[in-house]
Image (cartoon, rainbow, N blue to C red; front, side, top):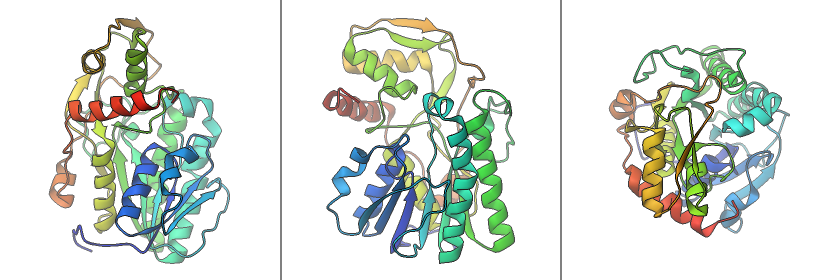
Amino acid sequence: MGPTTTRTWEHAVVTGGAGFVGSHLCSALIEAGTAVTCVDDFSTGRPENVAHLAGRSGFTLHEANVSQPFSVPRPPDLVLHLASPASPADYLRLPLHTLEAGSLGTRNALELAHRSGARFLLASTSEVYGDPQEHPQSERYWGHVNPVGPRSVYDEAKRFGEAFTTAHGTTLGTDTCVVRLFNTYGPRMRGYDGRAVPTFIRQALAGTPLTVTGDGAQTRSLCYVDDTVSGILKAAAHGMPGPVNLGNPDELTMLELARRIIGLTGSTSEITFVERPTDDPTVRCPDITLARDKLQWEPLVTADEGLLRTIAWFRGHPDD
């Protein structure tokens, strides 16, 4: 199928749909008139993330661990597999669960899509590139990953998920797609999930020191969640198998991010430096040429605009 932004879906299954990105994806699908079955075991996702959808026609919340066989009320025509712990704090706390979500969970979601004749999309990650030796990272780059390091449970689970998805498509003819999500941020992130944006915002609003790891020179490229969701849906609507990078090529250092959040919040917080985690990537920046050319997609929300929206959300949810 060629590129399109008008392909519509009758029923989508979103695994990990009560998580941060998954909940925004559920909202976008419901707004587009698609019935949604949100599947989540709430190991890291939260029911309150989709509470606003509870009364909407076509929305179903189904508690299940996708690493175990699961069923849905009716066959979908789209399966979006996002189920996995995604922050270092979560996957280091749940290493086996993370590996199972990327392996057994991917298999079960693929089998559901195959039985239903549905389009299948795997939400993979920029972490498949590891601590990259190519910069920026294009889809042609194979990565530089430590297979037995502390981050390997997430990195290798996603790499295996990509291999499983690709094999399912080439061997069984399942209509598959792999997207690689770079650092995404926005409302509904958890303040204590260990990622830089929620950590810095929570600390700035509390007036406590912002804890920058290492010397803060390591870079990330931050994509606002609305842009990430738009890219996922465009990739789903396109016939491409991927992989395709979805991220914002506007790269900044962690020290720059901390200073920007202090300024945007009007905080009096200072910055302190703490030990950098093992295998923490030095650089992270997507080459999004493929997404621009094939999907006509690129991020639209500026860093300051997205951070202000996220700060406003955290002000209204001080206990998150």
